[in-house]
Image 1 (cartoon, rainbow, N blue to C red):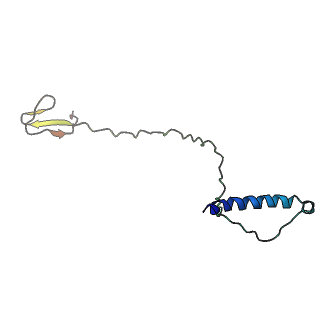
Image 2: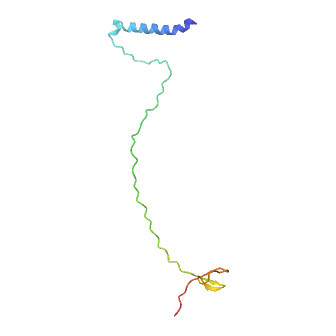
Image 3: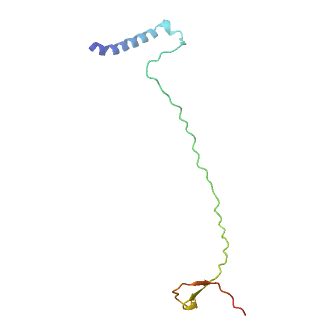
Length: 112
């Protein structure tokens, strides 16, 4: 059991020391290496999202609307009405109360 726990770190240390020593030899130090071909990647896949694009913020446009214009409609002249009470006979305001209800009467000018 102890061997299993020590084997991975020891193997990593051995590979690291060996690769440093191998790359430091004069025979391999003077020439450049170019590798063309498929690579083997061991590990979890890397997922990259789309780039974040931030639009510049501009102040909101100021819209000034003119105040609404109100035009008063001409009022039709209301025909004046008089109110007549048949019992007691008379016109308002001379008769104060009318138990049977007021009757509107259009005023007619008196003939000469």
